[in-house]
Length: 483
Image (cartoon, rainbow, N blue to C red):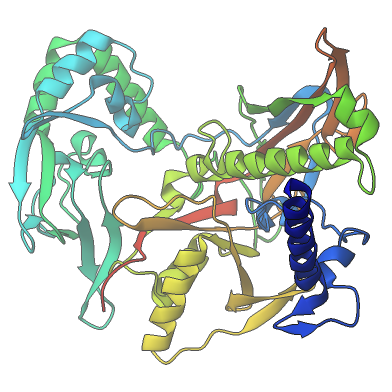
């Protein structure tokens, strides 16, 4: 009886399996199903994909120069134009003060290393608040104080040729004006300074400086040296003029001259990005078909290193382009969003052979919206086989390494390239031991007791701006303004 029941159950299971394998949608199948067939088929596989890989246009368009010995020295003509940086401030609540050492950024006080004296000078600055539309100084009035802009935006306005006012410059956080008036007698303001936003400003009256000069021999000597430098013949870039003669006749006596060099030129050291790639020997030995596991691990690791290199070339505080642009080469958007007018103004800062715009993709989109709003439709140009947007025939390339602030502002870079053009260059060194790519090597380290292979992957790089006007930056453009 038990055997009969068992046979009956087995027969029912066989019938159920037969129905599942031989029927589909209630019908008996006439061929092998795809689910079973896939067990015998060979799958086609892609190489491992990586979402973090970007176009890295900066690394592609920069000309790369050999830095033998890991160092590149930028020799320039000696310049007397010093102290053209920006100042940093501290605040306790609403009370703002300038950091005493930051006063070295003023041309008048550059090189003054007396901390006690700088602190005393910083204490003489008086905080003032201005609202939108307030006039800080009026053209024609006596120029008898220096202004440090701690926060806000100020327009320098002068008379236009045809009687209408014109904006000479836009000043913002960390900028200053009026520093030369402290050592020039009987001077008047040649422009009007008007607040575009609410501003916090620190001022130092000429009278307060003169009192400190009378009390301090060191400050008096420093001011005298500054006046002497002001009287030296200089070109528009602050370099000592080379005396020339032109248009003369007869036996005109020619002036002797020479081109002096910087005594302490800047040197760029190659930076490094490194990591240790680890692969188990079992993986490296057994799982290499159809793709070599070590090669794929190495490929993705190198992509990550190149992405970090791209980031450092933009953001590194020592050599990154965002931090190495001359402050005179930095401009700000007139109205907030990046407009065609702003791009034209940026072209005026790098007027000699500008070659590349570099901006975050969202900044490029914001610029496109502003162009559309004005009925302007930029052309596109071919760049390395790609059609990219352009302004005035200069390609505008995307770079997602340019940061976007919490206030939804970003920057636009413009530069020319190459040593021959005194432009921006990339630095690397080729011919490295165990070199895998130019400037990148992969070195076997060891196999540890857990049978894990280690490879040291390194890439060496830097960037150099050969002369200040090779790089310009449009700062603080708004990319998220509502229409």
